[in-house]
Each structure stands twice: as C-alpha cells, then as structure tokens.
Amino acid sequence: MSPRTKEQNELIRIQRREQILDVAARSYFRTGGSFDIRDVAREAKLGYGTVYHYYPNRHLLIEDVLGSGFEKCEQVIEKWTNSNRSNPDDKQVLTYCIALLQLWQSDARAYLVYKMAAEHYAGLPEKDRYHAKKRFMERLYVPLQSATQCEDDQIDHMLAVLVGCCGLYYYAGNSDLDVNRIAHLAMQAIKKES
Image (cartoon, rainbow, N blue to C red; front, side, top):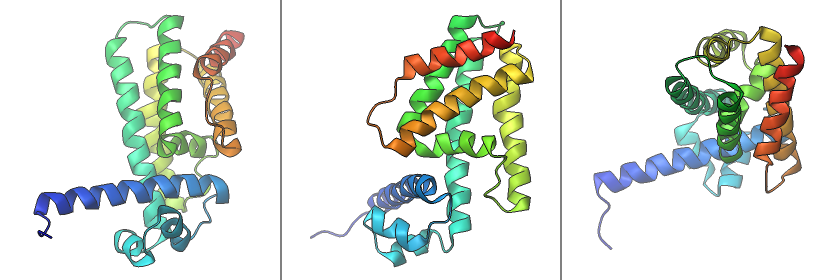
C-alpha cells in the first residue's frame, strides 16, 4: 500500500470535519444542543479520539457548526441580492424563499442558523450569543429587509413560516420538504402584513 500524499491527507481531514459538523448539527435538533462529543463520534462512525482531535469540546463544535452555516446562508443572500439590485417583485422574493429552503433541506447547519436566531441564540454562551445575533442581523436579516423593502413584522412572519415548516421536516425526519408550498405560505405571511 502506498503512503498517502499531503493532498490526500488534507482531503480526508476536510471530509472528516464536514462529516462531524453535519452529524453535530443533526444532533443539535435531537438534543437541543446538549449532545456529547462521544454521541457525535458514534453517529459519525468515527473514534472519539478522532472527533476530539478536531473539537476538544462541544462549545467549539457548535461554534464551527454555526460558522459554516452562516457562510452558506450568506452566500445565498448575497447571490440573491446581487441578482435583484432593484426592488424585487413577489416572484423574486419567492425565488429567495425557495433557495433558502433548498439550502436548509440539504444542510442542517444552515437551517440551524435561522432556527437559533428565532430563539435569540439562547443555547449559546452570552458572549457568543451577542456575536451570533449581530452577524445574523447584519449579514442576513438587514440585507433581506433592505432588498424587499418590507417591515420588520413582515420579514419576521416570513422567516417564522420558513423556519417552522422546515423544523417539522427535521424533527419528523421526513424525506421530502414541499419547498414550493412552504415558500408560497411564507409569501402569504408577507402579504397579510401589508
């Protein structure tokens, strides 16, 4: 057997980290954030020492789960706002809702960013809670509000519909999320507030 190259080792490291983050995000839903590193290792089918090597404590793991989730959500809002420079119409806002739901369906970390925002990041230590709230407001909420020209209540109701419906998907373990239906419900929430 030939020794692995530096590139192969780096690829394995990245894949393991992603695997750990995915499992930790899903574990968060089952436990409300009170999971143990051993639980993550077991579910990821990795040794405890392997997971511990990457994340010596649950706090650092949750921090990375949220950080990677934020990055993905920020990419979606940035792409959407860049393609909709003028005031977007209902169809364009619907497109954003669909893109966000599709991201959440495929990535629990991205969903966790919005779910925890709805709970004011209560599961985080105070110093981290402040930074998470600030990042959410500055990089996700305000750009959405600015692009749609909607009031706080309208954005809050739209996000509540999206987060709530997607939460049912995660907690029930459904295999499919009715993205279009949920996006249309979110649009109705905006219009009722107008």
